[in-house]
Length: 80
Image 1: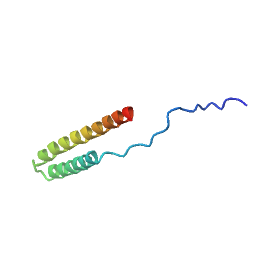
Image 2: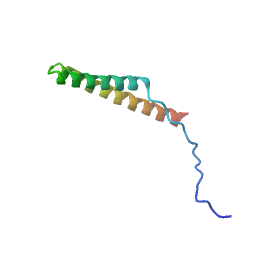
Image 3: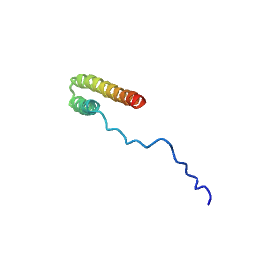
Image 4: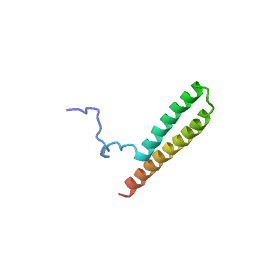
């Protein structure tokens, strides 16, 4: 019979890794800080600026922990 068109990969499929816990917590804090900033600005309070700054910090932390976990997975995959 002929070729079915599918090629079998020699690399086994890997299951997706779960999101790192610290990145998830930082993402939740970021979302809550954005919500608090919106509520503060709607009420006319300038305290919302603090919430915006906290949201920026939390988003940077989430990005950092995601990149760190990805780098660890790549180094662990290359050595083991």
